[in-house]
Length: 111
Image: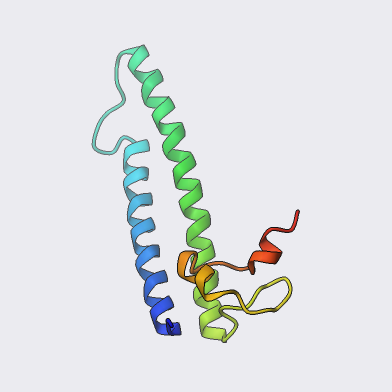
């Protein structure tokens, strides 16, 4: 059984990894280390790549927000409880998605 400190450590490591990835994406999409291609066809390819990277960055940012919320719930003593029904979130779920906000039953409800 994981302790709150175990979850906190896991969440902090995950946040650091995602933050590092987001920094790398920003450098790539802003062409910090490589200039924009001069050839129009290559610019199109770069733009498509930037679109994919921006989508990945958006997903990472959303996950970082969920992680920050989970860390706040650890500090406030609310970690591990569903935000919808208040029931405990299964440990198996938290082991897979430590930033889960909802139990499986509530997560599966249509929104």
